[in-house]
Length: 318
Image (cartoon, rainbow, N blue to C red; front, side, top):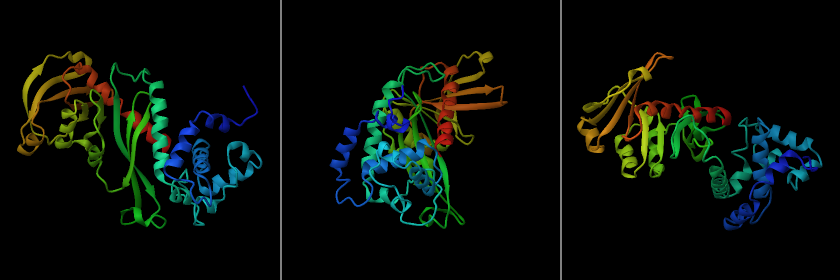
């Protein structure tokens, strides 16, 4: 029911603003305040994201057009483009992520607040269906490259005439909620991100073959966590056991294997499970590695297929 407030104001009212103020006080975010407060900066970024603003000029023009309604959105002063960014350049980034206000405010305020919101959201979707029968936590790990203009972002040089950064994301597939995001240099290899993830005991992590590093994957096994990833053709293995499968389901083999390369075996001395699945629709033969020996072989392929949700997340956010 319309209670006289804007939709944006009604949405913002669901946020735990007391927790936000507590974080601002902890990091002294509004000390020696000269421009936007931390809360107003958060509102500007949230407004830009929810309304699909395409540039800093777009944000300024849209907020200016609201006139007196800005007060009811939570803004106490006009949000000028010079406040959002010290340059006169129009940076088409979707949200003012490189804004001057962000440079002045402690980033930990927003990072900690994001964790609070994630903690609120995750229980709400804990029982949502994921397209696969699994009563444990399921995460998808992947990255996307965000292209930037080299003349505007020389610090993000990626190639000779190209600038870029990478956004690495760990997505909770119960509700498709990101629980970890790290923005790195565009040249950073995906596998290095495994060093920043603390495995959750009993949880499943699905990732593509770019994350195959047996020394790092062994940390998941030691932490009682499970991984499912695509196999590479150059990995040397020895079959120890073949388990019966129903080939009419698409599963071609279910094997217990060990790594035979000295370097790989020394980094991952335990047994692995390799499941081969034939995707008739796309005419592909897929091979998966996992350290879980309990799930039915037919469940492994749908588990990996859930990884597509992180691709959809990138499409909707970048």
